[in-house]
Image 1: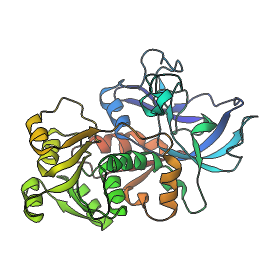
Image 2 (image 1 turned 180 degrees about the vertical axis):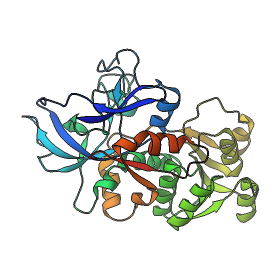
Image 3 (image 1 turned 60 degrees about the vertical axis):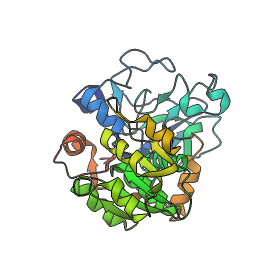
Length: 353
């Protein structure tokens, strides 16, 4: 079967790999529809291996080369003898985190922090940018009739974004700043707006600015043209916003978030920093500000996200800027997304062509 396989930095190949030949009692054979290219995938391509294992993974023994893809929807083709949660023909989305259910964090329901955590498409035998994959039945959520296969491939990043906004304790009527309008920032914008917040998005890139404007739910601020923190404080009687969700992984954006939030407000670091960032901790103390980080999402959150999409409250498909064939994944996917002059925000790969 065809699959997009990570071998090393700047070495992703669409190649023939052995197809699955059987499924275990609690496993499911699926045929992916769509799979998103994630920021984590981009980091692997640019600088990896980072989270893709160069030595056998402690949870499952996986090692590169690795079939990529952890944001995907799929059709159930075959089920194991003990599977009751899905049936052949179901359309599903996959919550890709895998955990041991034994460590300190798993025993406390914090499975996304498992000390041995692995991930489908990063540290597992299979991934979503392939013609077939074998998955545990426990990570699958059936897509209801009103949710498309394309939307199903966006549940994973939508859950990341929602967790960031929820950690900010955003409520109806709140003023919220989102820094960075990449896929997670755009999804966080949609989610915060769905909660009834007034949303402001700080973004330099003109393509991403235009995407946010097209959503029709937020005011776009260009930090090269104005002092974002001063603007927001002037707008809100010198107080600032109630919460800031930092989605860019950029030091200056984090500093802007801290400067923009009101006293006793919350700043949530959701974007991943690839290097240390400098902040003034005195700002936290003087203004009683909470600075929180988020990692992935609660592993039980996918059904809720799917239901929000089905109800029309979380129109995740609006962040998609391109749909490409698997054969074009390097040139039209990874290279375009990493290019300083690239014009794409969220690229989905058709795993069937």
